[in-house]
Image 1 (cartoon, rainbow, N blue to C red):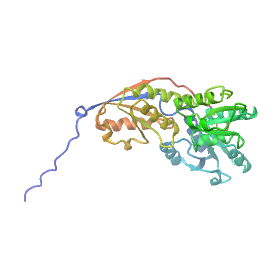
Image 2 (cartoon, helix red, strand yellow):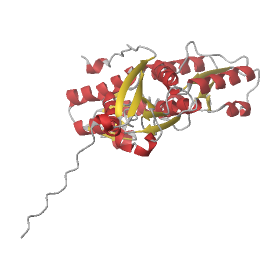
Image 3 (cartoon, rainbow, N blue to C red):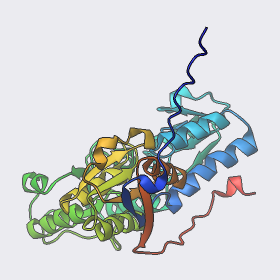
Image 4 (cartoon, rainbow, N blue to C red):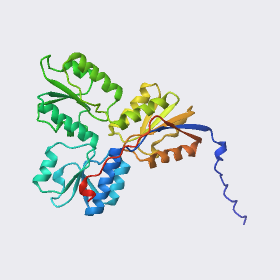
Length: 328
């Protein structure tokens, strides 16, 4: 009987045989100070109180982060009525309407507020504007948790949502109305500037906030994409489809004429996207950890001989304090 032929061994191609690909990695990218703080709040609550710790809404909009915290004992819910009276609960980084902590206090619950301090700043501004008798025109995206939280800081009927320049033309206010404006922290810098210009043109009496509401991390990540997009054939943005700041990064690249795609993990990359592509831009929304950036680089390295270049447009060193109840 003849011996079986040995199976043909297929050797992987040498990296040097792969076509080249330059990856321009935007900096800053990924986690911001508010996200770092929110995640640490959940982790410290688990250490201090033990599992389970309930979290109202996704602590940040990133599935990898949420799944990692679930594995440690966090339980994510949408509403407070899903949380037992005797269980600790954390409010997400996006902020909550005033009714939520009020209900927690009524039920004598142990709660920790992980609202980003920059979102809390907008909440305080809203309260001050209402105290001055102003009606607030709030620039934001309907249904986003941050918008729901901020609009829930003031009495019903005292705040109106404005999503587009076209919305400004439809507002039923006049020159004698006492108006002010605020904005969501994760909007497009350029779009917001246009909406503010339209508001000020139509209502010259409108009062601006003391400082811009769009947060430093949102502005910096958009500027970083602007710095690389013109040199790229494709920009990959790591982020969740419900992440406002990540979606804005895709828009920034596309408006500069560069194809851009939002992905949550490296396994979503289609190799066909690389056809005719010599340079890829890579960034991550403020809720995406650096681990996912490295995962994408490794994936691209399977198909191409990769050269990485970090393009830094700003340095960030912001750190927010943790709530005292977790540090005592």
